[in-house]
Length: 300
Image (cartoon, rainbow, N blue to C red; front, side, top):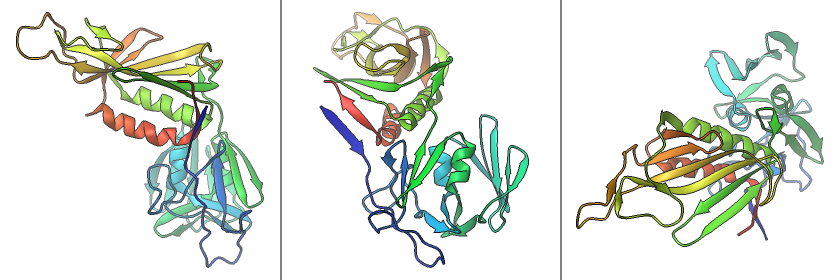
C-alpha cells in the first residue's frame, strides 16, 4: 500500500511583470523538486519548505525567492548589502539585486535577467542557482522540474531512506526514494548528534522496563539504503532513544547513567551521542516537514 505524503498546491503567478508564462493549468508556474510540488505559503500551507513569494517569469527566466532556494539546496545564506551569498561544500553563488552580474565560485558571469526584490524577498533565477548546486533543471509546459543529486555516504549512493517508528504495542515502517528527503533527513540526524557518550547500561526496543531508573527506549530508526526494501542493504543507520524513569513506590531494581531525556545512536559505527536540542519532538516536527517532501511506501 502506498502512502503518499505530498504537499500539492498551485503556484499563483504574480501580476505586473511584462513577460509572464502560465503553467499547464493556466494558474501559474509550478515548481517540482524530485517530483514533489513545492507550495507557496498560504492559509492552508506553511512551513520551512514553502515559498513565501510565488515564482515569476521575467525575461524568459523563472525567478524564485532566494531564501527558499537556500533551504531546498541546504546552502548557507548571508547578506552583505547589497549582495547575497549562498554557499555549500565549496560552492558559492553571489548575486546583487538590480545587477545582471553574478559570481559563481569566484568567476563572474552575466545573467539573462537581473535579480530583484519583491515583497522584501530577493528573487533570483531558479535554473542558475539550482545548477550551481549540482541539480538538473527542466522546464516543460509552464512547470519547472528540478532533480537534486543523490546522497552518497562513504562513496556509496543512497537510493532510499527507511523510517521505523516504535509505539507501545506496534511499529510502522515506511520508505522513500526522494533524493531531497533522503539528504535532509541525513543532515538533520547529523545535526542532532551532540556530545559523544558511552553506550548506555540499559536500553531496549519495544516495551520499557519500568523497574530501572534511567533506561532508554528506542523511538525511531532511520536507515539509509543502498538497495531498497525490507531485505535491502543498509549503508548507515541511526536510532533515537527516550529516557524512561522507574515507577515510584520503592527502590528501582537498577539505576543507569542519566545522559538526558534523549540520545542518538549511530548504529553502523556503534557510537552514542547526547541529543542536541531541547526536545525530541522538535526534531520530529522538522522531520515531519521533511517527510512532506516525498512519496512514502508503507510496509506495515
